[in-house]
Image (cartoon, rainbow, N blue to C red; front, side, top):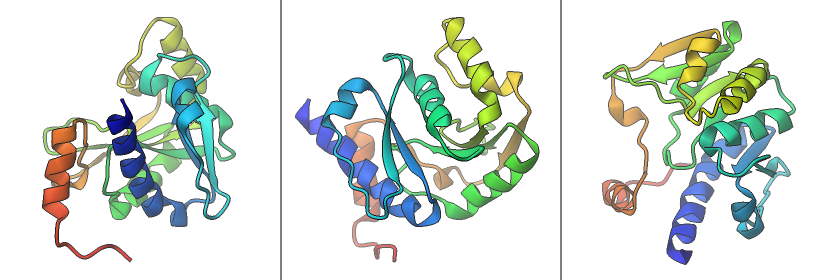
Length: 181
């Protein structure tokens, strides 16, 4: 629906504004249907839309398309529904990825956040193998690749907006807060 598309674009633009200054390449992985409606707004020429090779494969399919299209060996994967990017945590994850195929954060409940992580292109064959088996979850990838886990204690460091209610709650929580430079 148009309302959910506006919601998606608004959150995506907010995330992009936070990360674009720190990366020389930013890929937005989209399904073909989303790609038709997505208008790239490249401020520095670093933003590029990448279409999923096969629609309906979820985040794993999107990661595959992004990793294949990326110029760099190590790639930060950030979901567009994580509105506040914790740059110190992302830097810690990137450092942990130097000696691993994947570096993923795990919060206080020891739950891993696969869509705020760093993946190396070396995981592409394993993603393809999982997809060939019918797997759509990113989680099994961790057991198939050299994975480094970066622990953090404050669950609020990574906040997901999965529903309209999550989004509205997020807006209330930041109301009146000074904007980031």
